[in-house]
Amino acid sequence: MRGPTIRVASLAALLLLLAVFHLTTIRNGHGWGDDFAQYLHHAKNIALGLPCSETGYILNPFQRSLAPAAYPPLAPLLMAPVYRYARLSFPAFKAEMVMFLLLALALIWSFFRPRLGPGRSLLVVALVGFNPFVWEFKNSIAPNFLFLALTYLSLQLLHTLHDAGAWRAPLLGVSIFLACATRSLGIVLLPAAMLYEYRRHRRIPARGAVALSLAALLILLQNLALPVEDSYLSELRATFTARTPLANAWEYFREASAIWGNAYSRGAAVALFLASFAWAAVGWWKDRRNVTALECFLPFYIAAILCWPSTQGLR
Image 1 (cartoon, one colour):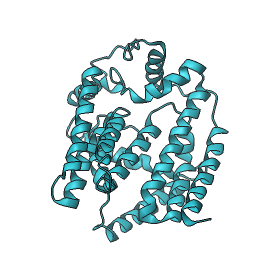
Image 2 (cartoon, helix red, strand yellow):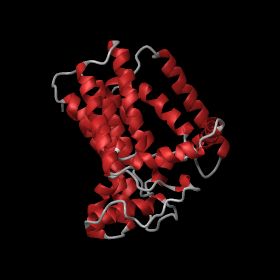
Image 3 (cartoon, helix red, strand yellow):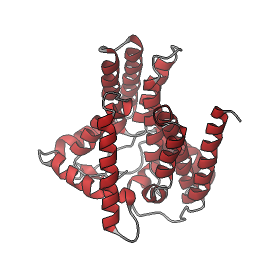
């Protein structure tokens, strides 16, 4: 077998193992949350041909942090066929979440392979795929895995934007739009792409301008049809204070150790988190001149979640 064939076969084998691991550990029930119910209502409306945003949820202007008037439409659109054929079968929806996770892991491998090599990239996929938090979170009906996949797709397309093929520019624009149509936080891909293009070329080349303009146009059209971002901005204006970023930073630091969570030792989880964080910081410092799109994306994403009125956990 040739090198590329071995690499693809190795990835396929690992993804198959992860699929079996996650699909066979799906729980039948569901946590009593809130977001999942609204996503299911959106999916139900799409499946039945009803207006997507008519879920019966009444936005409380004094408790805006509970949920927006409507969520972005892409995840419900992809969930609608599951509702149409399986109705409210939680295992069926969770199986779809696992498919989104596997797609995200494949794109993570594709993003890191040119930078880390095929072996280390497989290790990254295994560390994410078998992580206890990810294993538990796949039992949540949420758009996070789909958003992760589209984010890495956008970052990979941004890296290869100026390779052969003018089609890469509109494809990147559509990918950024789809990320925003999954979670509103995808909007930070726009300034991240601008920063990355400027760092590489000291200007925004024509392909970058086409991609960013197309993404912005599609996001605007979606917001006119379904004003999701307006709900979020209203919430941010109503509840943001000067101490919000500091309070959120402390909470996220406390929660981050759950990445290495286990049933035996909280101290071990914290120690592993600090060690992995230090290792990542050293690696970034040594390779700081070779900035990737991921390093351009992270500051904007972190700034956005720190400014949000309430912490969103590790998701």
